[in-house]
Every structure is written in C-alpha cells, then in structure tokens.
Length: 249
Ligand SMILES: C[S@@+](CC[C@H](N)C(=O)[O-])C[C@H]1O[C@@H](n2cnc3c(N)ncnc32)[C@H](O)[C@@H]1O
Image (tube, rainbow, N blue to C red; front, side):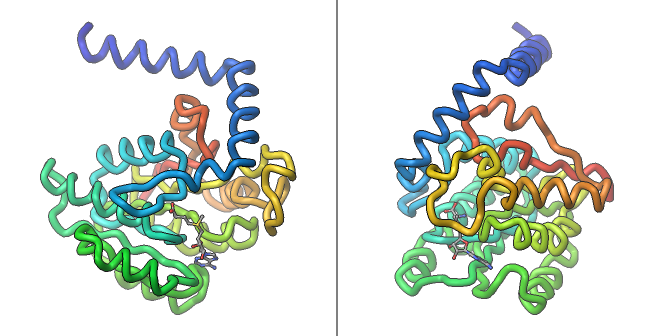
C-alpha cells in the first residue's frame, strides 16, 4: 500500500473510532476504573517516574517529532519523568534534523530536593532548564517570556494545578508564546468526565478543571482550534479536547 493510501485509510478509521459512541463509553469506563488505581503513577521514562498514560506519551512523541520545536514549556515537573521525556525527544530530534539548541523549560512550584538531584544528575538534563515558582506568578511568566524571545517553534504543555482558574491563567500566560502550527497541550481535561470517587480529595472536579478552562479560553481567542483527531485515535487519554493547535501567528 503506498503511503498516501495508508494515511487515508488511517484517517478514515480514526474518524470512525471518533464516531463510535460504544468505544467512547468503554474507554471512559476504563479510564475511570484505572484512575482509582492511580494508573498514571505507574510508569517511568528513562529511569524517572512520569505521571502520564503511555498512550499520551506516544502521542506527545508524535507531536514533538513532527513539530521539531526549539523550545518546549512545561508546567508541572513532579518527579521529572516528563521533563526528561521531552529532553530526550529534543535530543533525538537534533540527530533527526531538528534544532541543535532546543531546550525544555519546566516550571514547578515545589521541586523537592531528592527530585531535583535525580533530575539534575540525569544525562539528558543538559536540555532542561528548571524554574521553581508558581507557573502563574508574574515574575515566573516574565522569565519564561524573556527566555522564549527568538525561539521559532514553541510547544506548551500544561500539567500543574488542574483547577479552572489556574489553567485559565496558564493559558493566558503561555498560549500566546505558542508559534503558528504548534500546539498548546492541556493535560487532565479528562477530569470533566470522571466520577467524583475517581478524582478523590482534590480541588478540581467536573465543572472546575482544565477542560472548562480550555472552553473559556477558546472564547477569548481564535488563534487555537481543538485537534480532535489526536484524542479520537488515542481514546485512552487524559487530554481529550486538550490538543490545541495554533492556527495563526
Ligand atoms: C501532575 S504533576 C506533574 C506531572 C509531570 N508533568 C509528569 O508528567 O510527570 C503536577 C505538578 O504541578 C505542580 N504544581 C502545582 N501547583 C503549581 C503551580 N501553581 N505552579 C507550578 N507547578 C505547580 C505540583 O507541585 C506537581 O509537581
């Protein structure tokens, strides 16, 4: 099968999956169950815990390889697995024709000492610039904006505090840095669809989460559109309607 036939067939089967209500319900049912077992906490990337679903890790690999960003901004470091994941992709991109000077800038309000040591000792941390502070603090936002000056392709990943207000502030602060055709990926939009017992004692819940922030933000700007194909093909994802493609400069 030649490539464009393969691509066309893939596109049409993904669209069919997206229209399959039974599959959507089964996936959501599975996600709710898995969440009760803290499924997303069970994986490592190159030796560090990454608090992501494996499906989303593959999806982000596709995005980072296709975009070849020279800067990734991530909010929410935790134990560093995702920051090192992005660093490793930038390193691989560099040997696949991507920018040699690409970096990931990652922000967390609380970088615990043992996590900082493990991250800084990782061989791939050379591509990582860590910033401690709230992602929405004006001085942190300013620091990131200055660091983004001159960057040509910027990808933003929001994965810190998942309340509506916080994510909306992050969107307003960092989404404007996303360059045309790149993405702002908003994680944990899934919370909107989860039953309360799958969420536990958290400040976020249905009606107050990253998806509600995305909806509000998309009313404020027409720079972004939701790339539905990304979550339709994943089904098992925490970022349903969270892959925002930037359509203008
Ligand atoms: C879901 S975890 C991040 C997971 C990480 N991206 C990964 O994939 O391994 C959320 C992180 O956000 C951080 N956080 C919470 N509030 C924050 C804030 N206001 N600014 C920056 N980081 C924050 C927490 O300290 C926590 O480490």
